[in-house]
Image (tube, rainbow, N blue to C red; front, side, top):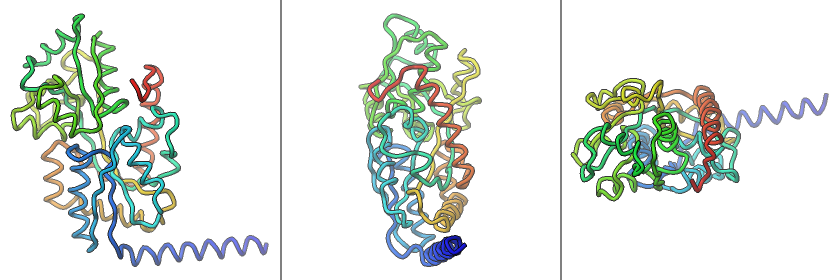
Length: 321
């Protein structure tokens, strides 16, 4: 009985300390780790959020890019950080594929992190360099079905774009070569320059380049056409049946970050996403804002991990694929 009383007393102290910490939080600069290099969608989302959160919280929110290994290096930095509410991260769809893709990953995705907010989703778009010969998807498909084949770049091995192209290619008997990049910025630099003829990235990532005329959209991975690319067919329309794959962005924190601070940050991110300027900037680049909190985001991630681990295993994909 005495041990139980002591345990309850310690829990009460911990809860009180957590609540007190949340009341004074934040009182110094917050680090927001973007788990991909500058120039990609993760970097852009992180910077849009950081700017607005700085205004709302009255403390600087500074973006730090830690890219590499499909986002797992930056995510590991979040997982290893002190869980005091001053380190958060912005992750991408590789967050759900890395657990099965990287056998020796240094953190447990579900137990080593707090899932704060699911920011939003977006279909991906297969785009061709304006310097390439591809004018429409039929041109791509003709090469893909030939011995010559096609070359497609993605943001990394095991990324949702990579896995989506594997599934589409199997159904449509493609012959193709995958080129993994260390993020959306490097990928689009090479596609725009014509070094890589085709790239797969989110609508959020490719839309500015489509508008600039440096790439041409071939197809999107959503169940229906995207409002930002109304003349671009879905892969399902091109004959790849029952096909849909959506990318996503989310905010994470180290495990054991006080629940009161996680809830406060979620509330602040939700508030930021409702700001007209933020909503317009994210929406204009193709994102559908979802703004789901910790419980919903955690459940979403478990489903993503289960879904894509099956694809990774069935296709024998490894970090060196």
